[in-house]
Length: 305
Image 1 (tube, rainbow, N blue to C red):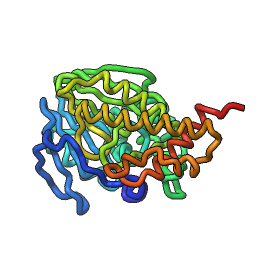
Image 2 (spheres, rainbow, N blue to C red):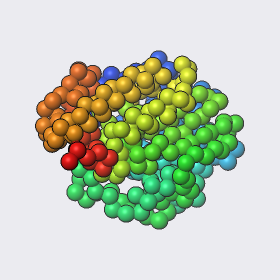
Image 3 (tube, helix red, strand yellow):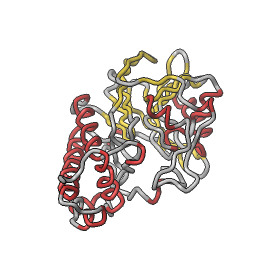
Image 4 (cartoon, rainbow, N blue to C red):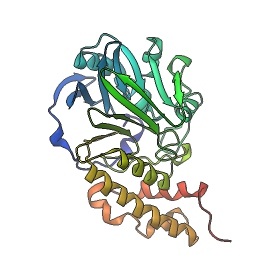
């Protein structure tokens, strides 16, 4: 969550999976950057406006997401110290949002490899305006900050003794979401496709949609077992049981919003039917998420003539 974008969108909810964490913290710009051990040399860094996963290898530091630009210098310094690396070597962008790509410019100027899905790379070359961003929008990023390695489907690499698989999740939270699976550590960095700090931003204006969100979570579930530590873009870790429950919730909302669309209802009318009402006690007011879910259907469904 950046200090100018999603604070109004995400409603605080209880984080699950906290038992996985053994934190120690340093201060950065008034907020604590917290390092938590994920096993096999992996560290989870929180307090950067997004979750950041760090791993050291012979060539330097690998990060999954870099936090917001305001936190980027502190995040990089903290990550290098946490895993005892000398320099940044590889940075993954799980999607284009400012909280995931705030470190890109520093990384690019330092000669680091920046990996993203091709759709994410393309978004970062232009000015992006959406409902949840301020009027000035985001981007285009400087040339050095644009991902310099992009892909389309699924790829693998070895780094720091880990076998990593990373893949595209389709049109889901955005149209460029990716996961990074640390297979030996059994850690799955899922990005914005998984939520654990209130309702996510369903970014329908950059290709996300509620049906795709369900499909992406189905793909993630296939990568998990009962011991997998699932890292969302924001909030605490999830386990497989929690991810399956979240998938069922989004599927219910998907089904209900489709029915509302087919009946000829508009966004506000669909929200008035309460498609997410029983989840609000845990997740907070659902209006923004339901309206985005409904609007996201426009590119995929049309009422019968």
